[in-house]
Image (tube, rainbow, N blue to C red; front, side):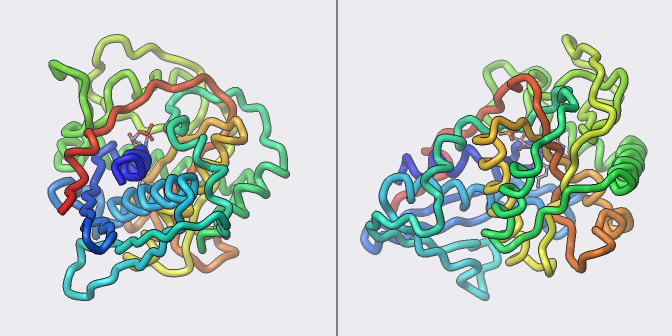
Length: 316
Ligand SMILES: Cc1cc2nc3c(=O)[nH]c(=O)nc-3n(C[C@H](O)[C@H](O)[C@H](O)COP(=O)(O)O)c2cc1C
């Protein structure tokens, strides 16, 4: 169980807040996933949507690790009406079948990283894009690669979001809280300066500037790609269940992309502002945008750390 949870927590989460807590009930073999309200971002993450996405991603990694170990997880999402923080009940039974084709993704779990580095601009082969669309569909979501004018529109919305962030003290303070500029030891949560990437000297990529007003040392400038390859992950509806679906689909896409040799980064800036979020929507589909993905080829990014399993897994 410790190994499986160890894989789960390699998942991405907004600002690396790691908003999850696991409880294993030894007698019944039940594993529970809860969200941790102490790691919420009430200003930036309205309704805790991003928190659910992160927990959904952790749940997906957990399913992958279980399948790799020869177990078939049975997942019940939001199993208790009177306990909103309880996101999933999971039980396991031995199985060789791997019906959902999850075990093959296991290799990618420790390798997947958010890259805030410049990408080369080399196009991604259509068959890889198809595979990534399929990965989202397999988990009940939709991945839409953006055409030229949609890229332009989403970049403008992200720029608008970035501008609003710089003018909003509460947003700035919440983001700054998760940037680990100078901690005495290696930070086990939040984003270390080493993972922030270079400043964007030129080019257009939706990469969040986590320290717009303050430049911690060592942040060099670089030229980013001019025409980023962007895709929006969306779900038919927009409730906590959909957010958990989106989180699992996001992680399936990211792991598949990692196996395909792609670098990836996530952006939720435009999606965090309700007035901007509706405009991120693909006008041809009805659905709620949940996260923006940037994909391409680029250098290996620096890693972010995780809290130890012993801090997030309670065994009773
Ligand atoms: C819901 C969600 C929203 C995110 N939004 C952003 C974002 O706007 N900008 C960004 O650079 N990274 C974003 N991230 C990526 C996290 O910062 C990243 O996952 C975290 O720092 C852990 O690093 P890792 O992905 O390399 O393991 C987001 C991740 C999630 C799950």
